[in-house]
Length: 215
Length: 247
Image 1 (tube, each protein chain N blue to C red):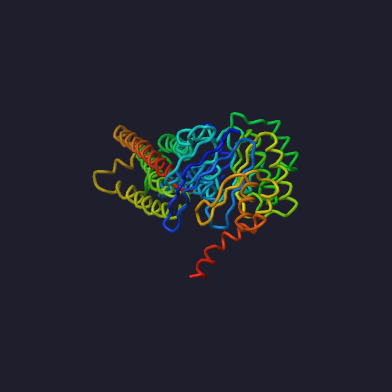
Image 2 (image 1 turned 90 degrees about the horizontal axis):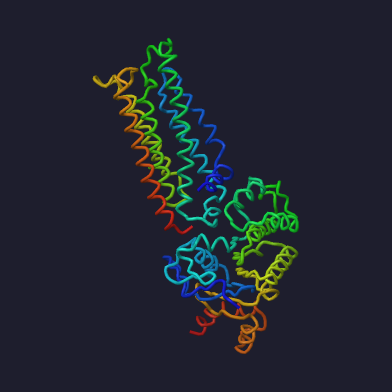
C-alpha cells in the first residue's frame, strides 16, 4: 500500500490536487457561501483523475505485482489524504474565526454560513458525497468520469444550498452561531462518521467492480 | 524443457466476438511467436492470460501454478509490454523507474543501469521524447530489470523501422540464450522466421496451430499452403473466401 501511495503522489496525481487545497482558505471569506471551498477541493482531486486517465495509470497499475483491490484502496487513501488535509486546514481557520476573529467587524453581520463546527461537518459531508458518487462512479469503468462528476456537482450544490438555508429556519439558528458548541460537536462527529462509513462502503464496492472489469 | 506458461481451453466471449478455445504452452528459454491477422484475438488472448480481461473459461498456469490466486507472485516473474511504454508520457523516466522498482522483490538496479545504457535510454528524458522503438526498449529494460523469466509482448515490432526491428529480434535471441522465455504477438511473419522456436496461430479467434515452427512449416508445405509463413498465413486467411466462391 505504501508503494502504491508513493506511485499516486509521484506519478499519477496532478499538482492541482495540492494547489486546490488553498480553497480551504475560503473559510475566511466574509459574506460568502464558504462551503463552496470544499467543492473546489474536490475539483482539484478531479484533476488527478483526468491525469490518471490521460497517462494510462490504471493499466500501468494493474500490471504491477499487486492485488487489484489495493490499487483501488490506494486511490481512495490518496483522495482521503487530500480531503483530510483540507478539513484540517479548514478546522484551523474555523478555530481562528471562532476565537481571535470572533468579534471582527466583517463577520459581525454575516447572512451566509459562519465557520463553526457545523460548517466543518457539512464540509465532511461534501467530501463523503464525492467519495460515494464520483469515486464510486469512476470505478464502474475505470475510464468514464464525466457523468459521475456532473452528478456530484448537482448533488453537492444541493447540499451546499441546503446548508445555507437550514440556519435561516426558525429554531435552527444555532447551526450558524458560536454558541451551543456541544450539539455542534455532536453534528460534526456524526458527519465525520458518515464520511468514514460511506467512504469505506464506496471503496469496498469500487474494489469489487474494478476486480470484475475488463480493461 | 519445463513450461513457464500453460494455457488450456481459454475462451473469452464478447457479444460480437468469441475467442477460443485456445491452448498452447511456452517453454523456458524459448521464443514463441503468436500470429494472426488484425482482429484475430491476439491482444485479447494476451490480456486474458494476464487477467487484464477476464476469460469466460479456461485454465492459465505459470511456472506450474494457477494464475488465479497467485497473480501478484506471478507478475513478479513475468514482464508484459503492450508494445511501447504508453504511460506517464510527461514524467521523467528516472521517476517512473524509481516508483516501479519498489514493487519488485528481484529488482536489480545495476542491471537496470546496464540495460538503459545498452539501449541508449536517457533517464532524464520523458517517454514522449522517445521514439516508438526506444519506448519498446524501455519496456523491455523494465521487464529485464526485475529479472522476468517470461516476457509477454503485444506487437512489439509493429511500427518500428527495419533496423529497430532487427535490434529487437537480436535482444529476444540474447534473452532466449540466457534462459528467458519470450511470447510475442505479431502479424509480421518475417520477424518470426528470424527468431521464433514455436508459433501459435489463431484465426478469427480460433486456434489454427501451435507447436514447433520447423514442424509447422514442414506440415504446411506438405499441405501445399506455402513455403514461407506469409504464404501460409495468406492461404489460411483466404480459405473462407475460397469456400464462399466455390458455393
